[in-house]
Image (cartoon, rainbow, N blue to C red; front, side, top):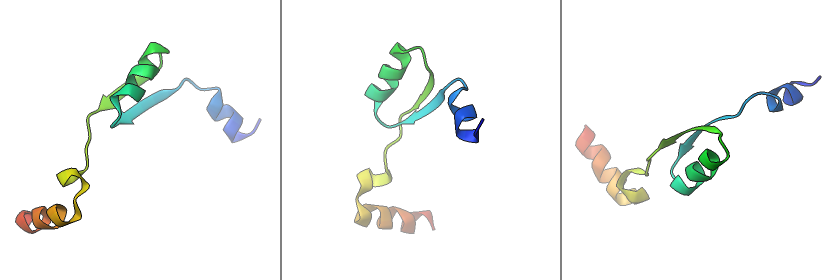
Length: 57
């Protein structure tokens, strides 16, 4: 049996970062899932990220 087939026979465990609706859909299917409420720093704004990095030192 190939390694990929072995992988797909294992129980699915998921870490979801971001979309809570994806987390909810997995929970409804009784899939073990952990949700992390992550967002990019400064909303992804490159100029703001640059300014924040300067504050960090």
